[in-house]
Length: 470
View 1 (spheres, rainbow, N blue to C red):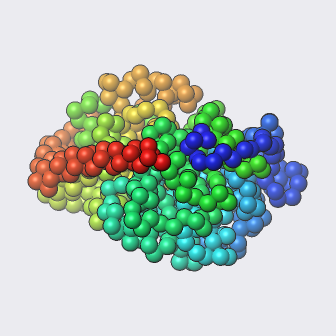
View 2: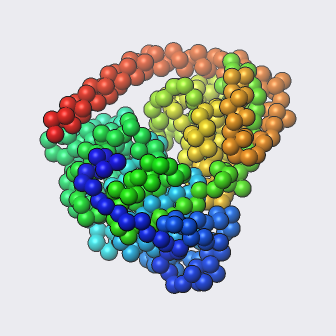
View 3: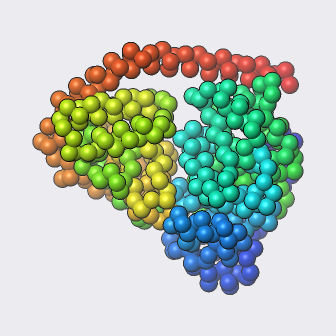
């Protein structure tokens, strides 16, 4: 792991039993969690509610007010334990289940210190996927709107020239995927990272995959040695253990609240057994039946990775599609738009709105780890949520494996989606799907996919050559 992150930074394992607030007694009284010290790890019973306020954690009053306006009145355990050490200048490694508020755990202290000395680039946040990058940027913009924070999202699938112009304006926060940011560092005028104070690896366990190794190695070599490194993950892995000993400072704080059951108590899980050939029809029916003003819809496709669109117009089209009062002709057109979006997107509303009241996800069966992460995003920070898994005849074993891991059987959703009612949409959905595929072909979508693949391969070869020369 030392090769990945430049010069080896030795770390002695330390023991922390709580964040630096007052005393262990005060912490237990305020947070309402059972805190157990074991080696250098803080283990927390994550099932009870945090009663402490953000002001007690040392967060600026203007940020506390902003949190209250967004409906966030009390910190989650990962926030209560990780914010004070970050504010005190320590490196932090935090592990907590998806949806427990990890993004705010590093966004709030970064904005707190940025408001005292605003300059850019101030913080670099690396994440494995573009979907997470946009979600993290949305959180920074939401929390930092009153201080006009400038946040740049640097991910693939977006014009590099526009991104370069944005980076030249020295944004306060850069949220990027490693591959695309590596490409920008290879340009004639790369972004100046010499004054970066914070480096955050979100979903660090996924970033430590071998596919990101060369990109991360190059990026970390460009960062200043005097910086705060923050690692957040949904799981504690052996790679994170090794990274903690080589890439973090001597007094790094470690928080681990990964539970034995990987989903939150406020999440209701259902499965719907369907024939594979009518999956799109079932998805369409469920989206019409669910209230679009209360829920966000997420359909993750299992086999085809494509680009997510964050275009507001497409989101409005999806809302129109859900309006059952539309005429038949307009409904077919809306379904055509929806099917087009499904073909072009890997995820539709995957993250949802963490600040909302409730979220419903609809998804195909996928790998165990990816599904557990998606479930966590459905019921974020203690909010209610529902997850409906569309299961085909090929997914039964995977469904059973996931139930074994979670330790909970899913409920059957068949009564809520009677086959006779669903199949009334079959002709319209089939027509919309056929038209959508024709429209995508006319627009050269398949050609663009091939061109992007060739471009990525060429960029990877160039990066490999650069690393070999160095």
